[in-house]
Image (tube, rainbow, N blue to C red):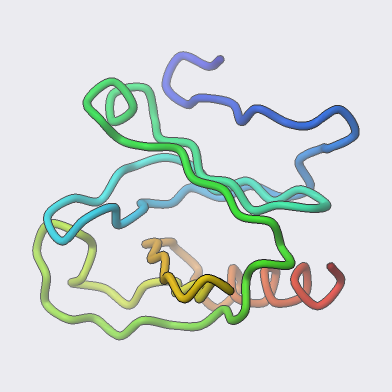
Length: 118
């Protein structure tokens, strides 16, 4: 565990192949700061220590469960990152996860390639 960022819990043969700072929109009123981690099999989000201590949740999905990676247009929401375009993940169960990331186009490329290779 780092001073500011939590490390993800990985399966035995799993290793982190890419990581990127992100805010995860976890409700209409809250975006949680932390980091996205990509492994050979999953995409994970771990909140920073402060947000984790105040109710921010970890999140993960198998790469095979991510149906689409795209952009969520800005919607003007002040507290959940909606003032910016966000990374949009559509999952096979019909749910949608939103993340605020810098260099959105680069992140899209990395994740689309990982999902194609899964």
